[in-house]
Image (cartoon, rainbow, N blue to C red):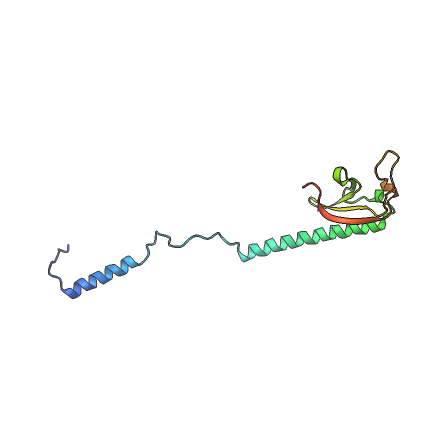
Length: 141
């Protein structure tokens, strides 16, 4: 056991102080001195997200192409079969819609103005042979 020695030299005291200052100047292992930033996705995760979004866009473009090709191929609007074709009501009365992707719809209206009408009112979509594309959008929100 080392005993206290009051007779230390100035050089020993200076060396002791320097050693203690060096130890105290180092950050403790248990204290985090950095501010945590939000975790960034890895490059692999970024690539996978980009690839999934790109594939979704490609699929949506294919569906749009299919709907446009079907519009060109049919004699009248009532012959459409793909994408749940249906006439719209309310503030969109006079327009027709087919599904594209998720909530997105291809919206169009008859080119002829006034459009052919039914005796009971409303558009006679069986007589509509030409349409004007209005938009691709979400009619529910």
